Image (cartoon, rainbow, N blue to C red; front, top):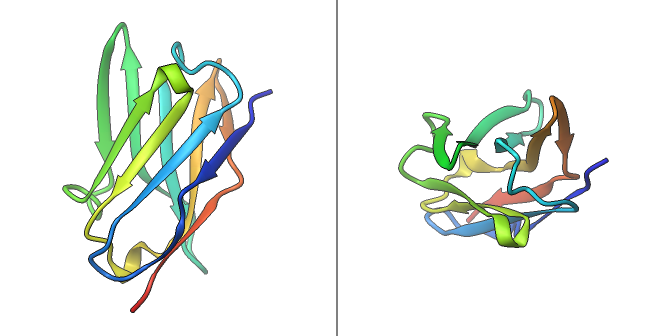
Length: 118
């Protein structure tokens, strides 16, 4: 069993920035797939960004709506995945969830609320 704890959400004005963090209860150094997803009210959960690391090489993938604004990164020494969010828009408002895949099993955090409002 893996526990994931997200933090860093909050209320921010349009154009502002937030940095989300997700701390895992186990080492993520050998975890190939990590990601951030979000779910807005009345909508399905959607992919925001993923980072896949195989044999020392990492590849990132972003939803079109966040490309150029969001950056996903991993800190294996701290068992942490970050999501740097810049130039936030109203439509980025959602609950953001951290996800890791270990031996084919999906683990999710409890989510952190991000609200973009003026």
